Image (cartoon, helix red, strand yellow):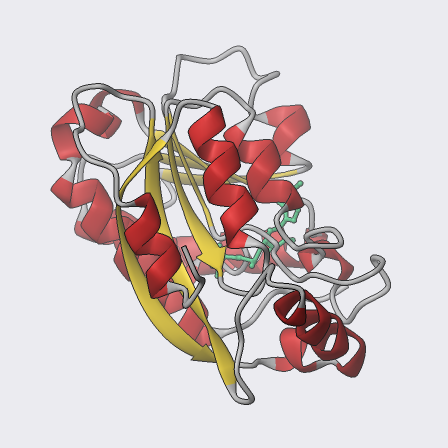
Length: 238
Ligand SMILES: C[S@@+](CC[C@H](N)C(=O)[O-])C[C@H]1O[C@@H](n2cnc3c(N)ncnc32)[C@H](O)[C@@H]1O
């Protein structure tokens, strides 16, 4: 097992989370409640966000032992350990079972690598056959606000329509083009991505794909719905 490493992707995730938390500070209530995170990775991106937003507290979970070890080092080095904590384990077993105070916002750059099975370079990044299993599970977990990365090759159309069926709207998002990295470039994964795109369940070109970090909400105090705009930014036909 290794630790997830993709500097551009993590930076985009961190920057986008920071901007969305700042922009929707009051209705997201994170100053009062804190937020939870699925998938800490090496924690560098969100450590910087915690450093920039002095009222932010993040309780994070990761199933990868090496990632948790690296994350704890990075968090300590950045001096934000009092407001950014990491626990080893499956988010879905631990975050809700903790019995702590109510938290309405979850943040995540979830595993989204699509592949026929879990036998890939870093199995913890497997997102199921279409890549969106964990994001769908997160949307079904009962949080009012989900700030999450949505990849263009991981069936984003189904993700967005499922979110709408669950009562969410896409309030806003930040999209960026990314080159294929080591995880998506693995031949087995690349072939599978080609198949998903050919069947209309994703988009990628020869060099890369798009990722958007989007705010899904069920909070009536946050108006608007940019769901179609999100899908267009991911190059999907709406
Ligand atoms: C794409 S990486 C993102 C890491 C970090 N947030 C970043 O953007 O740099 C996804 C992370 O989720 C973790 N993960 C996968 N399934 C998980 C689960 N069920 N609960 C908690 N963490 C999980 C993986 O080990 C991996 O570190």
